[in-house]
Amino acid sequence: MKSQIKARKKKIKEGLKEEFSRIREKLGSPPVLLSYMVGEDPSSEVYRQSIRKKGEALGIKVVFREGSEEGILEANQDPSVHGIIVHCPREDFLRYSSLISPQKDVEGIAPTNLGKLMRGERGPVPATALSVMELLRLLNFPLEGREAVIVGRSLIVGKPLFFLLLRENATVTVAHSRTKPLQKFTSKADLLVVAVGKAHLIKPSMVKEGALVVDVGINVVDGKILGDVDPRVGEKATLTPVPGGVGAFTPYMLFRNFALILREKIEGKTPYSPD
Ligand code: NAD
Image (cartoon, rainbow, N blue to C red; front, top):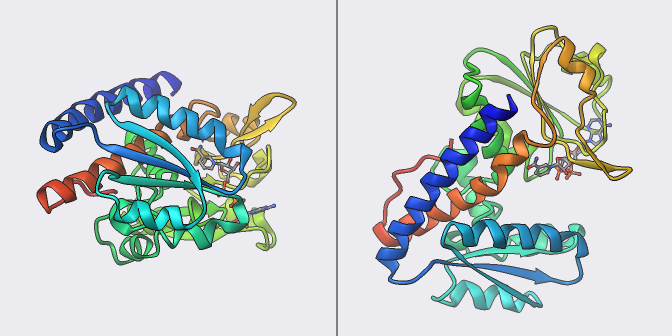
């Protein structure tokens, strides 16, 4: 599966490169993505650098800026900034994400964009949720009438994914830290998506034979990257790899959102549907 994912990633990258080159032509200069840091958040630094490197390879100008929340409001008004990513400590996420202009919100986390997702309207959607959908398409997993269970209800993964899977006519259950017992729900899933952040939480006994298990988790344990799913699950179900699974697509889904935003700006219409 890893080589299949790699090949798809390459295709997505090529498509985006072409798309951003068309956008650049229309704008007359490279599109500018602002990576804005509010407060201290060292864990965002690596992510930021990686977005800059990948974005610049697509012809996007990624600008770093640090400051207080006023800076977000200024960037909303600044015509030279086309898209904004805000990095902040976890506890401030709700406050700062709600300040981002929906027209510049490449992460799809502004209240208006989350509302659009719920209403089934086009708009930027949190990249990790889009990435899971991309993986399901790659694996030709039919969703209609299937039983999907998501473990994790965060605003950037579990909740947006709920709406995307629902849109594809799956019957969706969202389990979380207070679900009891977790196994009762996970073991009935044809599709199990796990986005928790606890290494190897899901054991083989919790999974239905022949299911598809999408492991979103990224946990660093003793210098190794581990998923939320015990690899032995792969003996009875199809299990997506970590690393090199969902995470392979995530940054490119962010750039897809950026392209959508830029197209809306340039053409006033959106030929791209996020699902
Ligand atoms: P989060 O901490 O915001 O949310 C975790 C969720 O897991 C919560 O909704 C909580 O209710 C649930 N949970 C916690 N303990 C549980 C338990 N014992 N049983 C059932 N549910 C439980 O995390 P997040 O930002 O959604 O990220 C989840 C994981 O996905 C992390 O490992 C993160 O690193 C990873 N992630 C990966 C990508 C990617 O591209 N692959 C992108 C974003 C996040």
